Image 1 (tube, rainbow, N blue to C red):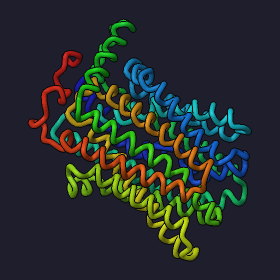
Image 2 (image 1 turned 30 degrees about the vertical axis):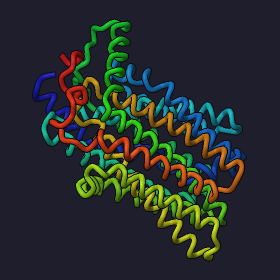
Image 3 (image 1 turned 180 degrees about the vertical axis):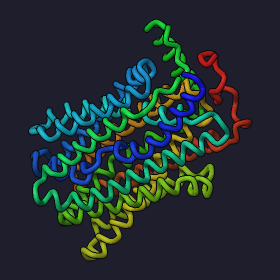
Image 4 (image 1 turned 90 degrees about the vertical axis):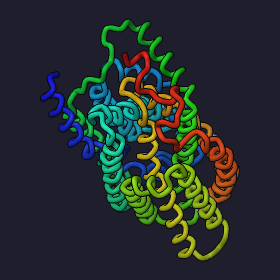
Length: 427
């Protein structure tokens, strides 16, 4: 590819990416009614729904290193297209789901989809941005715009979902399927960007390079801190997505109101995605700990509201405000974490970093999911949330202490092993 074509390809990808990300980041018209659809229409128990997400996480752990190898071997564009096609298959399986085992198989397909997608999508954007001092900021702006628009679209779909669900619960699912197909079509419009890979390597040589890269990554105290934080944060946010609907059902909120509350959460996440640069500039090296503190306090408040009788209207108002805070923190977290992971690294090792991060996220999501499923099987959602908040508080104390000396430094303050620009596999 000559220089002019490369410039045009980069511009094309950056132009398309925000639109693509807005409709493909996750399933539109699905998560607002996921819990209701699986429990009410498919007759799967709440604890099994939570357990299904833990199996999803276990599958994700298994797929991460193979997914990284696939992305590196066939390229980010092809993997992005493949991932979106698998997403359509997942929705079809949920539509046909009639027992717990079918749900597990659907989660298997979804895990393969997002194992590829979580690496290929952000890597495709990173490769498309020319190297410069502003690369991290440009990445944050484009990725943040995609997240913001996704959450806004998800909010709109949440408002519609409740009414469509009351007409026929299959309507939102069919619309969701249509959007995944549209995402696949849009992803075809991306251009291939040279990624600096050695295409003449044998499979054995490539596997050795992967192992060397992963070993080197895991020696970085900065990255270990980010992986640990990212895993805990993602596990909690994923659990709260399921607990949200479960708690609202417990306190007697109608389906239409539940989907509107989901929409409000998406709007809060959209604001968080848009304001993530300001949030970072305000809190600097305390950004990640502030995200966790906001989340922990909000979970505890929701649990208390589910137990104490302050009246339906007052309790619902406080619960909605607290959930909005959680989703605001989630919106900030998703963009900021990817930006921090991409700092001080070259393109060739980037997919391996995203793969190890995805493994960490899903290990913790599985662990937290199993704990959340167990709690939900022995007590109500409100009590479960209080227990989760207490455990999270204890975890935060240790995590903040661990991160304090390992994150938030200037590039020149880090040891050479923390910087991934000039290593042997980049020569």
